[in-house]
Image 1 (cartoon, rainbow, N blue to C red):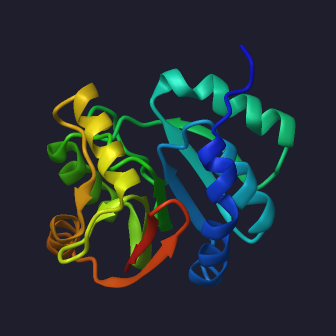
Image 2: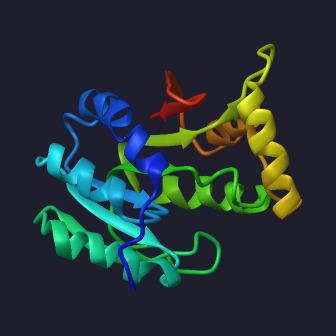
Length: 195
């Protein structure tokens, strides 16, 4: 198997890193939910050496993540934890932050609810929840590219689609998370931070 590659990861890693450097400067342990190819983990791990970065994903994605980890050999980035947010047991550890990219629009809404609930259960007091991807903001016209992406997602499965920020933020609030900031990033994506 060749190492998996995502052009989107390559495109967005530096703008995301710029925000994470500031937000996670006093953190020590981060859990990434849905590490995908593993590209984000190795990039952020290399540039945030003060963090212990734990990868996780469904078991079928582990081989690809491991290929990136083996090739890059970054000591503070750890082998993937088997984690389907609904089906698998979450780690017993406590994390200072949780980072997830491009996951909320792929999960069904009931899965997003479980995701937020479980994520906050493994976060330390004052921990950060960092969620990257496209979102639908009330009173703002969705970009044409995001409308097309939303339609493409829904054509693959009715349970998928770009999430409304207000709905995600309401869910976060119900799980004792307070919204801190939104950073607009390239390709009509955003990095949302709660604490």
